[in-house]
Image (cartoon, rainbow, N blue to C red; front, side, top):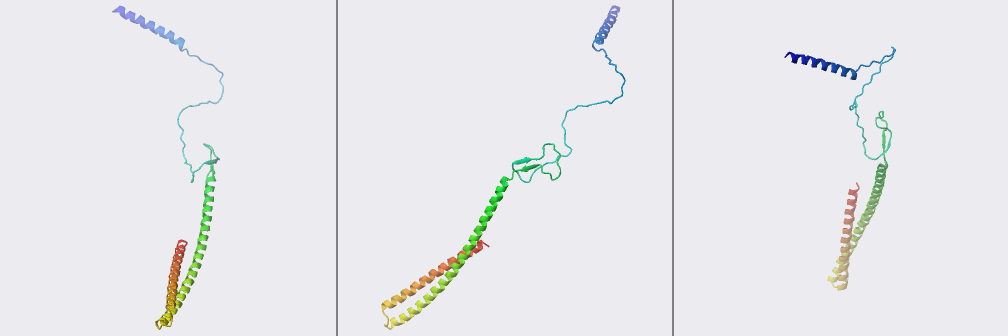
Length: 198
């Protein structure tokens, strides 16, 4: 057993010596000498990661469209009320012009409607005069029919005179009904036109 202990001690000494020699050659400490000087010490740190802004502001516009010009770039400093982009206004100008054309067309339509109403008023007045004239003619034909009928009953007028008087009365009565229907139609058209353009 003594021999094993001695062999272990010798092995330990040899391994320690070999380790000391091998380690000394590979990790020899090297020193650099320099003259002592006064100066500043610079220290730098490098790191990787994501930077997040303290304040994030969403920028948008009230209208959408194609951007025509840009006055600020990414990460540019901007001030309140500063224009940062200009949207192409051509589509909006076209819509305004179309709306103006529609407005002028509507104004012309209103003027035409007013002229139409005035024409209908004139026709209604003319129709009223025609109705009055037809009533007068019916009354006149009725008086003539009554007079001829009285003469015919006394055999002082011929059948032809009686037939002519009856025909004239019927004809004038038909004209009165036509004039009244035309007057009522024109009056209804006038009322509709005035109601539509109030």
